[in-house]
Structures are given as structure tokens and as C-alpha cells.
Amino acid sequence: MTGTVELCGMEFFAFHGCLESERRDGNYFVVDVRFRCDVTDAAESDDLSDAVNYAEVYDIVAEQMAVPSNLLEHVAARIASELKGNFTQMLSVSVCVAKRNPPVKGPVAWSKVTVEL
Image (tube, rainbow, N blue to C red; front, side, top):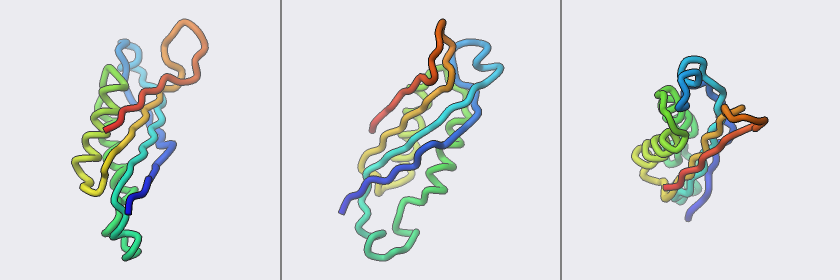
């Protein structure tokens, strides 16, 4: 049995970006993770040890968000790779990293990148 699990709206203050000011001053980011996984054991046992633990997913995302990168693509790909490598139940994973108020010449609420593995 497969299912889709999402952890949405994880907020971080981090130092991602190509500009010196972004690396120095930081910015607010929001990360959404969506993954398809085998939920057979968890659905039958009702035991957390048979499921993907959301707290562990969050910890991995937080760890990767703390590593400064130039590109959101790089951050999202690192998060996706770490998640797939740590949770064998994950069949696929999608990671969206959004940067608030990106440094462009006009009003933009977000820049977002989604990576799928």
C-alpha cells in the first residue's frame, strides 16, 4: 500500500543566494516536502517505528537549510537526496524551497524551486 505524506510550511532563516548581501544578511525561506512511500506496515501496526517520522524529516531539512548555498536548486536537491538516503520507505520525494522577497528589480513575494527524486 502506498501513500503520500507532506510536511508543509517549514520556516527557516538562512543564508542562501548568489549575492554577497544574501550570504551576509540572510533571508526567510519556507520548505515543503512531499513524498510517496510504502505505508503498509505503518497502516497495519499503528506504530511510529513502521512509519517515516516527521520529526526526523524536519531535522534533516533543518540541517540542510543551515548549509549556505548559492542556488535554491542545490538546497532542494541536497534535502531530497538526504531524505531518500535516510528513509528506505520513500519511493519518491518532492522538495520545494521558497525564498521570500528575492532580490529582483520589482515586487516579488517568492522565488520557488521544486526538485523531485
